[in-house]
Image (tube, rainbow, N blue to C red; front, top):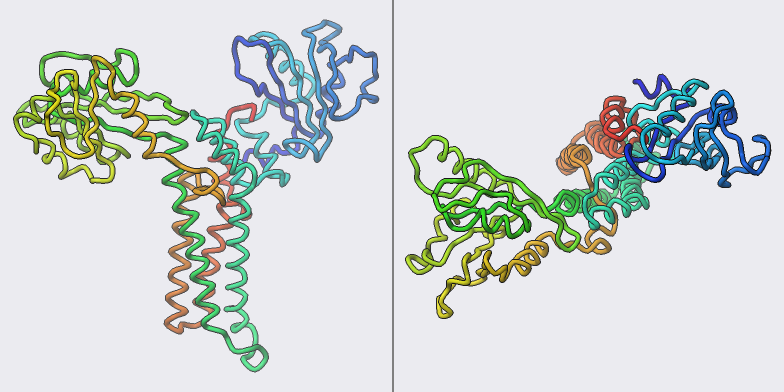
Length: 458
């Protein structure tokens, strides 16, 4: 694996966003970090490099062959008290493109190596500063687009989820010890197995595992956003509604039916939550292959979404107030929102179905309340819903599901009085799944996939 092979190198990278900005940060980590920076940093207070104190901020100059590249700030961190657990120097220079890259070039000339994507975080993991769960939380925090997603990532970084998995693993080890004791020792040397206690251990393990697994779907809404498909007949006002929700003209609006044929995707942030909207083709019977494909895609997108807005305009309520029934065949009750469009044209005495949201794209009446209602769908309480942390990646979910299959199989074998040797095999498989989640078991393929997805300076 590339990271393990090159772990003794001293690595360096720009860890702030590239481009125009007031400050850039270059990170150096490894056994020769201090030696390399010593050759190029001159403190303005006149102190010799050997007299610089760790954890202090020093103003100085970065020089190359007696030529000053930039005035900078340096901070020195001694192993193991750093992000990577190694000797680390952070160099703060003026921003832009030229200066940070010039500093990076000098670092390389003095023996540094440009870091691979995620290599700093990998070294942090390798040196026991973080586990895989925390590494994935760092990635999700960087990728967060909303306040809610960032807060959830920070909660996982605090170690709650790691502690929960350690508790689950320890309980599974206790269960395994009880079972394997009956394999390793004669019956007359150990107490009789308490089957009721073992059954309770199984139930507790399964319950804890299912509870932590259930956090993924709810957490996904906070991290990735609520997916909302807008359905309706042609000319119901879907594209106009989308433009009003976005407060910009993204969708083409036309009086001609069938204008929208492909899916148009756009997102906003409302009350700290991300909402992704999908404008779709109007649903109607059509012989045109292109429009028919648009209708098929609209139905597929509705199935994929968390919320489906069924948009019905005034004339359809007058003509047939059960018009929305045809949508109910493929939109589950729990995620459908009936929205009456063009409310500025409605008679006050019109009888609308229960829980109908009334909006006007022309006057913006009801728009904010509709957005509030959508946000309620993804509303979570970080302290109560995710008190023990949450799963944030499909990798974690897949391993948790695999582990639960093994655990339930072991429970069934135990209840059927199978040989303890066979029962214990499945418990070990469960423990291995938990260890893979936290990274206690080495898996180079996982490391490459996870850490290479990070940015260079992380």
